[in-house]
Length: 218
Image (tube, rainbow, N blue to C red; front, side):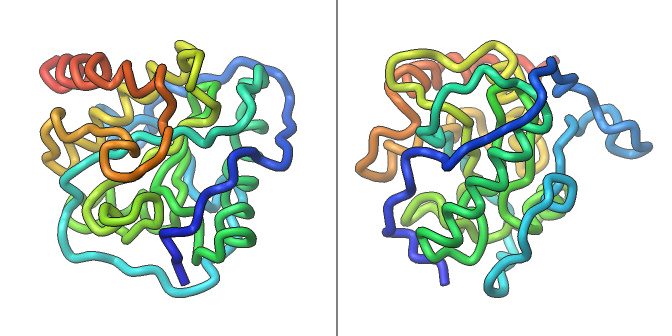
């Protein structure tokens, strides 16, 4: 069961990987989506565990994007291997410590800029643009908002450029797929008593909305 009122752990239990720069912004080389869909790694690709319980598919599109930070160490390992470990650690935390069915958020962006599906089924729902998977990332918002976790802690520092640029591209794609207005890109603290996504990242949300709007207009 997803008990959304339970607190999320502040730190991951460890992440490892080779320190290499990633081509996180590459588009998927597939026919129909090549021009619009950024590279998003699926749960199968990063080695997710199966959900503990059946997840709920909601028969309506999302109408908001909620930005989070994991509140984990600001790693300087920007590799794909590290990003996959972050996703696995986050899922273990949410399932084993919070007692949730799966990763709480729909998607995760690593500090190296890699975009990953978080909760099973979220990527296919996003591609369709008409349904969403019920999340467990913010009480009161789990049936309408897409949750994006950003690796790191942004209370006193800003996210690295690779992560920021990847987040802009990702939010633009989500807004396009679901028809979400850019002014509905919000922070976790807007709807819950939390420091998430950190003072520095939260302060950048107006810039995020502006850059996403520019990407959608381009």
